[in-house]
Length: 63
Image (cartoon, rainbow, N blue to C red; front, side, top):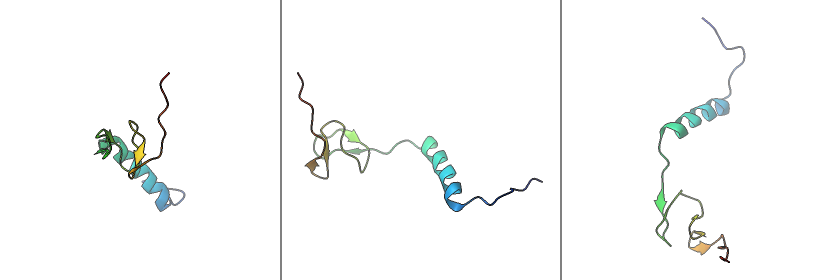
């Protein structure tokens, strides 16, 4: 039976396992409290640019 030549570190092992979970589980979304659009948690809203009750991404003016 084959044995690994070098020990695989815990961080390398966990990175591999995290990639498996990212592919198999659907992305979790929350509703933006400002506009109600679904967004990823802990990120600024792509629709209105708000995060934690303040505007962090200014909207571009339409010309």
